[in-house]
Image (cartoon, rainbow, N blue to C red; front, top):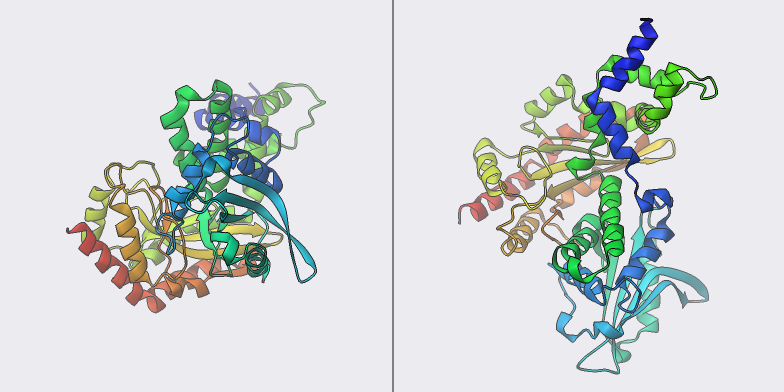
Amino acid sequence: MPEKHEAYHAIALNKPLSELQRKLTRFNIFQATGMAEREIKHTQFLSYLLDPNESHGLNDDFLYRFIQAANINKVNPMPLADLNLSYARIHKEKNIRREGVNNKIDILIEIPSLTSPEKYHIVAIENKIRAAQGLNQLLDYRKAITEIYRTDATADRAFFFLTVYGEQPLDECWTSITYSEIVLPAIEGILKDSRETISSYMSYVLEDYIDFIRGREEQDPENDLDSLIGSIPPDILETARELSRADPASFGLGSAVAIRYSKAIQYIRNYRRDPRTKLLNYFNSKDCQDLLKENGFTGEHSIRSHLRFSFLTEVTTERLEKYCANPTKSWLKSHRHLAIEFVIQKKGDSLLFDVILTLGPTGADHSEERPALVRELREAAGYDREAAATEHFARITPREFTNLGDEIAAGSGQEWIKKTIQSIRTDCNEILEQIENKLNEFLAR
């Protein structure tokens, strides 16, 4: 058998590559309609779900769950019992005019008050999928909304900045929320509690959206295609890359294999081209893992967009692993669900780095006490932003981390990782100790 034919047969026999192809070819209505990079499409779908009078059959259930989750741990939560949700009005791409300038807020919700029917509760949602916020964008939006909905006609106003990775709003009056913290739990709750009362079609649509967002944010191990590629032998990866350049018009064994495994082969090709792949490989290398150990850190399961490591001592680690042993949602394989993350996004020829501290899911039995844990850890960290905390993910990020993020050329990423690991240990050691002490106090109760 020719050498090339053996290589093609090896591809057909490789289970991880077949699994990669299976996951990528699973039909998803949101992938099929090209929503991945189209912010307005997400806004339109969210507006549809939030509207109690739309045809989805959810009534005001999604709206209630969204507002409830978004207000958890908010400094000034909305009075949920006073919201006449059945008569809420949902405006998408709402024009708000101020000082002669027209702006458009992604979603604006007017909810009548039950105790004062002449007044409205106002909910503003600015949704960012890829585009970054403008320097004064959120401030201008808030001022315009405040002028339009004056205090005498408004019960209260809430401003939510919805992103995939938890970008912090430049205007502190906005509450930072993410899809994993707010949108997905609301949908999952509906599917769990109300599946029998909604149509099968709507259930499929909601499940597709969950899968789509999880794949987008790359938090769920079930969608971790990076690790799947890591389990494919190098020689098979190289054959797959060669097949990505094959001429489909030239029929033969190679083109047949290229067609059958087309999505997996294209994903592998793009994976290699992504500058974050080299950084993930470096982060998982012995050199970087040794650097982490030298600075008292432990490397955690990572993907291209999130490089993760923990900072806890052995005693605290054992306590946290036990506390998180029955998670409501998987995250880190170690169950050390408090991790520092380097969040990496592509921006043209550059990479955007953010440094955050995240508390993952802590357990099925801890939903009632979790808000208290999040609140105490944030106090210890000096976390000074309004942000919701749900059973899935909560940011605990210390103020000291906010100056560590940067936009740099892709080729400088490895040096940035080295420098930042050492900076966290030298410049943030005291605050990390305070957070760990508070965690130990909480777990010892």
